[in-house]
Image 1 (tube, helix red, strand yellow):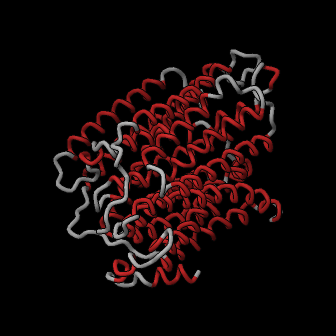
Image 2 (tube, helix red, strand yellow; image 1 turned 45 degrees about the vertical axis):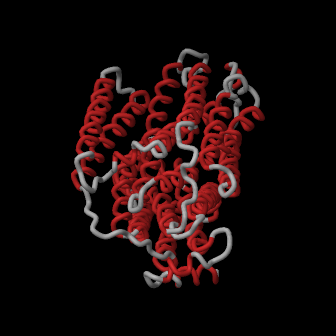
Image 3 (cartoon, one colour; image 1 turned 45 degrees about the horizontal axis):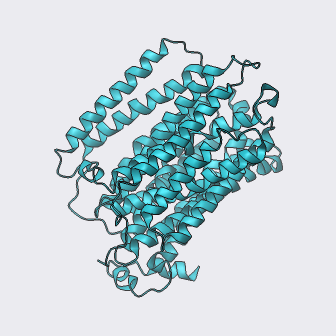
Length: 503
């Protein structure tokens, strides 16, 4: 911990970080202490993502709602995170990444405490949505690490290595949260309020960690916030993600064929506003999102890959769980109970960690472009293997582990690559956009997969089970996303994301 303390203390003046950075030895240099703190932050971020899932059944009973109402929690949080992440990241570029990271942590802590005492559906829904501010933590952390690493000759590769370590902390936290929740609930005598206090305390401590231990970046002066640009972006994201969320709810809520009119209208309106947003941004001196930067050959494939990988990373776990629980007497499925299905997800999370570790270890020596392509190919191969091999548990675990290795590497590699491709003063918004596009990809896949699987329900012996063709379609889409991402990354210049001379 002494290394952490000295690192943060050394950043108390504007001059000392630059002076010390080139003198510090070691693989992580000036950012060693910073990464130590951020790993703690990401462990808590992972806890938030894994802690509540085993408790949803008890939360449903406590609030007096139906199981299907839980879908609104996820939809609300996805909507809010898609709206606020670009704005907060831009504010980080303008006013300092630590400052905005601390604000996001405080807002997350407040929402997490609100969840403890929420007693109604609407109260819990609002608090759950506001808790989504944690989504901006990782983009801001990577932006801060990269900005401080610019003075080093290995700043870019150091950022890639750090990103891999942060993802390890994130996934480890998710496993810790998932395993701890049920045990704490049982130890507290099934007291839900006492159980929900634990993540609230953890996030509060994280806010203190950021305040005390994290140094600030050096934002450029003379920047202005493109308010109208962000309004247009938020409106476009709201329309598109709202349309996708409504599309997913059609089958679950039995809304009927007429609801598709609203889905199409929302999506078309969202696309129209996106076009308006792009035309507006091209006329701005300091745009909310620099479209010219996004059009660079080292940037647009990264953002497109984030969308394509989001399809499988965020959208494929639900179908996998239902497939694993399907009765094999139907001719497919594994017939696993809830505990066994959770073990499958656990294996997938471990493969994500291994992929992130491999990315961190190889980030110095391997070409970043080659790593991105290889990771995308692993995702494609993993899901492609599901098409012929899905009857046995070991086949499912092998396929999922291969895809997980690729996804684990990409979760850290994509924001690091975006930061390396962004000009100075735009690292925060560039890394955040990989998160936003990944979220849109996940929303898209969740909606499409829900429709695909629902279309086959009732056509088999069980009126609730999806057809095998539906599952094969889901896996084919995930595989196609991985292979298409690898193809797009081929267009990235070979020298992209490489270390630059010290500034």
